[in-house]
Image (cartoon, rainbow, N blue to C red; front, side, top):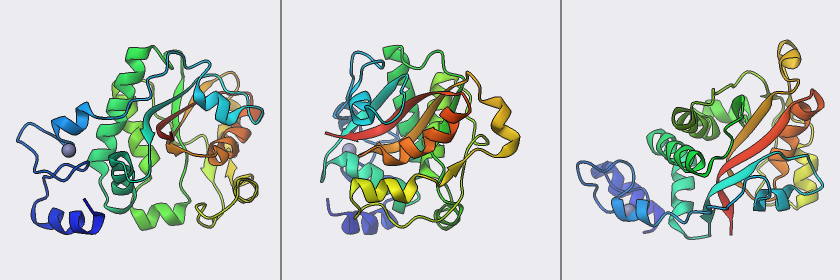
Length: 230
Ligand SMILES: [Zn+2]
């Protein structure tokens, strides 16, 4: 369903499926049963040699990597990601984080991790949106995995323009120095296993930039995303 039409429908019928727009039954939350069944799971056998390792190959040392869902243009995973960013669907976002954590538990991924750290949004953007969708995903994942959420070990320090229309190199330049570890946190990172959380991985430039200052201070980095391009 077209997003605008769905937005208008939602004004009148708030309990509709974020994936396909059908009214939800009383025991359904955020997504209908059909959409839950049809989630396009990535479900790779190993988090030590994953498709995220191929994306980030040669750019950063990666311990474990896993994405929960495949993302395609026009798919309902795109609807879900859109809802996170523009419709304030925090309940849906936390729910997806929980499902993602349950799947990774089942696969035995990230079970030695010390912290989940969401990739920070720029404070201006976060104020405008009211929340950081990666932090809400991480909260849901933390509920399911019992890995503590930590949002105090890395911060974002300058405004970057929208990433969407830039080449990989331009994106890298754009984000390569925007993340930093607050001075009071720098002694807490040595040998810590940190799972960076983001909603979607495309080129990996943002995750690479966010990982760098943590790696420089001795942390071991894993990456988990809700979605990845197919
Ligand atoms: Zn549905």
